[in-house]
Length: 415
Ligand code: GLY
Image (cartoon, rainbow, N blue to C red):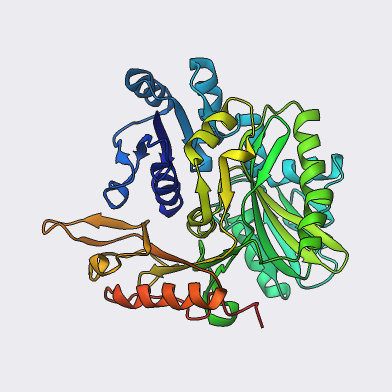
């Protein structure tokens, strides 16, 4: 079996490794992929657009396309695969709107009674100010904004800064904004494989979005993650299934979205119950790097069947233990990304997993930094402490000038 993954980051490296490790031994490619993930997926660089990608997959007789990044889906990757008769695990454009338009997602949730925070759509700075009734106030830009389209404002100064960036400077484009009810509680990411109204949920995970310990500092693309079947009590999982996942699946069918792909539920566990903060139409990053090492069985066959319309839970199993993922970022991340610093110690990590995101191969065969979040290490263990100690031991073997990482992944939120 030949599989093509679309994307190039740590999430795609984790997908590649999980697919490559499948007992059916598929040949795995990644477009564009990267040299850092080449041992798991052969890179396919230089493909300019979806038409060229389809032509390449036809020529190579690819059996399955797996969408890693959302941008290709929003541009119609799955629709083009369908037209070409190539099974694709990733939703068509209409389904991908659940991520590419936050207002569309909120309206979907309202229509299908999926619990979420109250919201009011606004189209001007004045209307936005008027819609803020209390602080903290959550302001969200509707479209894709590279993770910068959400502001949790503790006071009017922060709100004015966001209003200025959206309505005056039009930093993200010309789209609308909505003011959302501020919700309190622990957050959890639940990612499902969905196919025609059926779903299997992967091991629940929690990501650490802030740069610094104690969830301080600026928001990032994720500084680490924890995954385990033990992360949530059984009753909470059942409630998420009943109140969040089931009505969402019914909604996908009722709205005729032909949804086959990963569906990411960003959930907050409030006192009234679980509520959805966001949907994403792909796996989470860095959740993928923590969730996928816990999968056993034939992930490749599972995704191929799911892309053809059948969820077959017998094909994969979930390790009951823990996985901890730690991200190493460059000196000035997230203000700017860095490059050109040699990375030392990669070969010293022998039994763990190193997932490349922002790295580049250099002449001596080693790697240097090439992006804000450089790589992640993941380790599994029967207990959270075991996984955490092993992950931090691996992290200590790898270094580059100015490396930033958090020391409380897998500790904070477990007190
Ligand atoms: N970890 C959050 C996301 O993937 O969107």
